[in-house]
Each structure stands twice: as C-alpha cells, then as structure tokens.
Length: 146
Length: 146
Length: 146
Image (cartoon, rainbow over all chains, first blue to last red; front, side, top):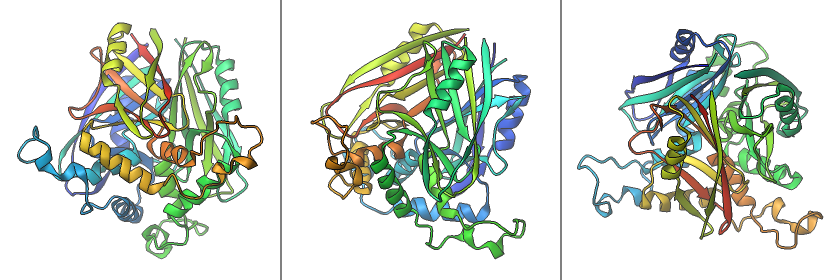
C-alpha cells in the first residue's frame, strides 16, 4: 500500500472565480505511481469549495449568477455583524454568503483511481470555486492505493 | 490490500428521474470480498448526480419540484446560448439547469465498508439523480480495503 | 494496512442544530494509530447532514435561516401526505424539508489523514447538521491507512 500526500497552492484573482485543477491532480496521481485506489481532495477553507463539473466559460457565468443569487453578498447575515464577534482580526471580511455557498457546493471530492488515472467522464473537470477572493488557497490531496 | 474497480451502466428514461442503485453497489462490495475499507462512487457525468437519501416515491416528486424550482430549465442561462459555443456537437442540449442541480446534489459519495457491507442507515439508499435524461449513464465504483 | 471502524452516537436537542464533532473525529484518528491515509464519515440518516465549515455561533443562525428559507418546513410537500404512505409507523414526522436540506448539505465527508491528523484548515470544523431533531444520531467513521 502506498500513499502520496501533497498540497496545491492556488492564487485566486476575483471575488468569485472558478479554476480548473484537473491537470494538476492528474499529475499528482501520476507522480504517486499508484495505479489502483483513490484520491481524496479537500479545500482547506470555509469560503472556497470543490466541485466536479464542466469547465465551460458560459457555465461559469451561470454558476456565479445562480449561487450569488441564492446567497446574495449584500443580504442581512448575523455572521457579518462583526461587532458581535469579539475575537476576530481587524481585517475580517463580511463573507457569510461565501460560507453558505461553499456548503452548497461542498468542500471535498473523492475519485476512484484506476489504471493510474483519476476516473472522470469526458466533460468532467475538478473545479476550485473561489467565493471570497482574491486569496491564496490550498487544496489537500491524498492519493492512496497500490 | 485489495481493490475492486467496476462501472455500472444505467439507462434513464425521463428528463428527471431517481434510480436506486443500492442493491447493485451492495452486490459489488460482496463480490469484491473486501470486509473492511471503503467504497467510492462517482457519476461520470456533469448533469447526473449521486445522493444518499430515502428512496420514497412521494419524496422523489418533492425532489423534482424542489430542484427544478431552484434552477428552472426554461430560465435564461449563458450556457444555453449554443451559438456562442463554437466547438459543440449539433445535438448539444440546453441543460445549464441540470449542471447547476448536479452541483447542488454532488457528484460522488464515499461510504465505509464494514463487515463486508457498505455502512448505511435503515432509511438510506444510494440514489442516482438523472437531471438531463433520458440517457445512458455510468457510475464508477472503487471498493478498497482488505 | 490498517482500518479502524467506529460509530459516534450524538444526541441532538433542537429541531435544527449544529454540533461540532471535530474533537471526537480527531480522537478516533489518533486512537487508530494510522498516520497516513484517509477518514470517511457518513451520517446514517436521511434528515441529518455532515458538512465541513466554520463553527461560529452567528453563522449557525444564518445557516438555519438560509436552509429553512430554501425548504420551509410548513410548505406543501408530497412526502408529508402521510395518509398516502401505507407502510409508515404511527409517529412518522412530516419532514420532507429536512430530507431536501440534507441533500443540499450532503451526507458524507472524506478527509486526508496526514501525520496522524485529519487534514483541515484553521477555520474548518466537522459539523453534524441536525435538520429534524431532537433525535439520537449516528455517524459511521472509517479510518484507513497505515
């Protein structure tokens, strides 16, 4: 049994942004030498999600409109009442909507590894979804198998 | 350590449809001979999700109404402006809503395998949720353990 | 290769409630002696979800308002027409909204285990989200690796 742990560092540049990390994950699986097993990915953040879907520019626009429509940044949230939270840093952002959207999208993904590759369909990509950028983000990746 | 990789083929028959695949997953775990470990399942599609919940006919009607209410098929989506996407096949469907609903439901599930069975509660089933059918669908399943 | 299976029992006390189980999961990983691998957690229920996000009291209020706003308990659901479901116990609750919210949040989480710890970011906690309490709940946890 082998395992291969690593962390991807990803700089995001907009408040809402979708970044395709499929190529980097595939490279890590290949580097691990693991042929059969699985790969677990998780965003190490509470306002940045992971999602497997199509990497298509127009769909990215729909995602932004859809998710920000469900949890509007400017709506009224308790979490954004910073004066009620004594132990926060002075630069704490008002980002309750980003937490809620991250919960909807989910924080982690698991994929089978078969024949040395993460198993994915033709139109699938692994997408990091930044909801409170720009920031420096990290994704933990454990490849596991033999 | 053992692993047992397979793909389920599932034909769907309606545009929105819920198909219980629990029995087929349990059979694969049993076939693998693996007693302790885990099973990772992922839909190989971007408009077809996986979800663990109750397989109940009336709840299936609620799911359809709820999710199609959140992302209505006939709403205005950028991804459905097919003339702006040069590299698509001539039979490309207008299915942005199905991508969004799949993101909400999620693409993969992981379950512990214990005593030769995927661990599930009494009312839980593994459900394939077709959101852009009818189609031929595939689910990748990796059982992993000893 | 080692595995360490266990089930957490958790009593909830309100209809909607968020309970941080990070400490208990960390203790189980430590107890397993596994240094590298992964941990799979799943709620064994259809109206109680798992989610990795921030454990913050005001955000918990936002979560309750947001998710109960999307799927209101008092809305009209087929699943709540108990007279149409012949095979249910006499104390069956009207909880369609709780099923739908659980699907949005998701039923399971997978995390890498590295250096003897589940890998998590500074603000991340593992949260059990009760949506139809109070109840006695169970979470299955498989730690897996070496």
